[in-house]
Length: 405
Image 1 (cartoon, rainbow, N blue to C red):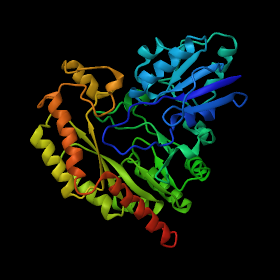
Image 2 (image 1 turned 180 degrees about the horizontal axis):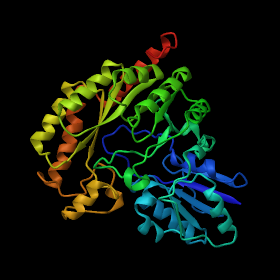
Image 3 (image 1 turned 180 degrees about the vertical axis):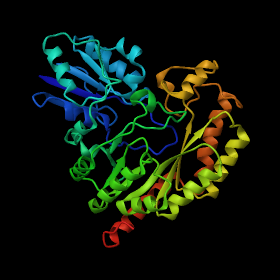
Image 4 (image 1 turned 135 degrees about the horizontal axis):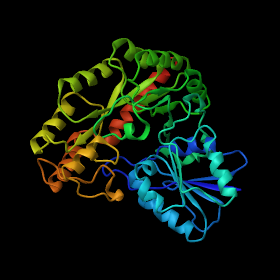
């Protein structure tokens, strides 16, 4: 039996330097596909996708809302010829009702624990269930094993001769409930750390010196963070992550463990942000701000002050995005209640389009301020040069006797 696993393409964020990271969802799914299945994987973003073949099943791994239009195109093409289509991933969970009307079967939740064997058994009987619902029944975290990265075409994930980071997670779940995020809806607010030895084993299996720890946040449990960082020190990898606990001892340990830079959400000019960025940098950890534009207190002047603030605090990199009300987020619930949603078209949910009515600007004005933010922050040093600076720091640290400091 042959399955075809597809990661649909989408329109990337305007103004951001174009590159492709190896997708994480498909390699996690592939690790759980029964070994007797002949599996073909296609990343539609980097490889031409054939739609005229006839596998026994097409499985769509759909992470982003913006991938849904392409996912539906693919599903339509295969279903028209009688090929069954299964869809899963974050976007499938957030838009389950809509997706279920466009595919033969929707898989909701996490795949570990042999759950895909039920899909295989039903497929062999010719009776796929419309929904495999495990949304509120995550498997024991101990069952999460090493992702199957062998399905990736490595040469596709290189930017200007530099191999892109491999993605890995040390935990699932998030105890926070941040306003633009849908993590609580997807997996609840219970933090579920993987056994440290399994994280180490997975990282040791990855033939790449640079990694992205894709956990929602590492700042979940200080004791666990310390154990994780101590285990990472001897692996001598460089990695990026979402926020780390604001603790000098843990930040120093993170640097020793290979922390290269962190992604930090920024939407105001508060002393909290100023202190947090400085604290990371004082410990040798760079900061890329994921800068959200369009909050209710943002008008033209507020966004200008925010950009000036980012330059003043010497932020290493900035990725400007327009606040986007994703399904399942507290933000979406509030804007729905206030009648401020402008569109639910998934093609518009790329974080560079205005999909809601801003409180203190028109949609056009917010979009203009988005362009202003990119132009102003990168006026003296383009984004590519700032990225090159970060890579140069890594190479210099690697050359210093192999040390991480």
